[in-house]
Amino acid sequence: MNITKEEFKSINTKQNIFEYTLTNKNGLRIKIINYGSTISSIEIPTVNGLQNIVLGFNNLDNYLSFEYIENCPYFGATIGRFANRINKGQFILNNKKYQLYCNQQPHHLHGGKVGFDKKFWDAEIIHGEKNTSFLKMTYISPDMEEAFPGNVKINIIYSLTEDNQFTIEYFAVTDKATPINITNHTYFNLTGEKSSILNHRLKINADKYLITDERLIPTGEIKDVANTDFDFRKSKTIKQKFDNSFVLNKDNSLSVLSSPDEKVSVEIKTTQPSMQLYTGYYKTISGIALEPQAFPDAPNHANFSSCVLNPNDTYYQKTKYKFNF
Image 1 (cartoon, one colour):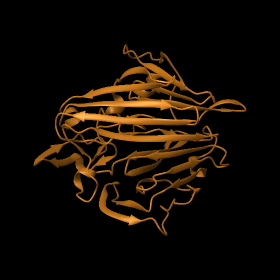
Image 2 (cartoon, rainbow, N blue to C red):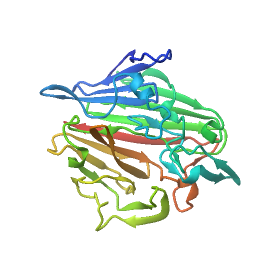
Image 3 (cartoon, rainbow, N blue to C red):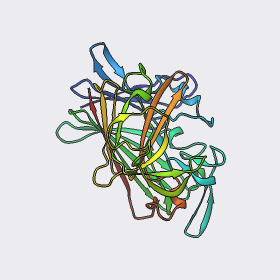
């Protein structure tokens, strides 16, 4: 696998932003910028040339235009310190109450006003053994950034194999107990935006999903998907809009998104306990975000798996994408 680096276009910032391209022998190309540790494009070879199968932009200014607005789409970005929603932006940790910024009133969403998606990350190309290369992104989140406790150092390792497997590994350490939930917010459209995402086929290996209220905050109830529209245990056409969290089966977390003609697919396997399915729209185009993560609002539900990272422990999660074309 080859990794190249070039300057990413911008007219509004003096910050050095670079785009890193991971390419394998099959012509699969994945581009990542160090603003938001963002996947800016994933291109597959076709008879008509390369086709981008994710939503994104080719210049920094378009990403910056969403910086502080409530309907930020988070195209391809790394999400943290806490992905998804926290009810009223509040949680109690070690008998202390914390109040976060509520950027999706009345709740906290995706790390707050200036989450990991809007940070400038340090990037490094690492050359390993047997001609392997990795892209490493690093960000240090200071104590009380967005009102979260603890100085947290985050490393993300991106790698691509010759058999079209793209892996994202997340590492984090802290000096104070803190909730942490990191994911990637890439939107896929496997037809290159030639078809609505609702025409795609989807399989999620999940027997259960989370019940939410009208503002998409979990009630704490976990329900079987059987005999509901949330049953994606067998591949089927998506058909309708979703913004819901699925409880992945521990023995096999595999999810598969396929183009309507099933000629292109991406298989997703993760160590995370849940998958947020979000069908998003931007102007006239649509994409589907499949976000492996901890349960939304986990700090406020004793029956959800813990998302608290303590000093002397290391946060680690891994998600692998296998592209077929």
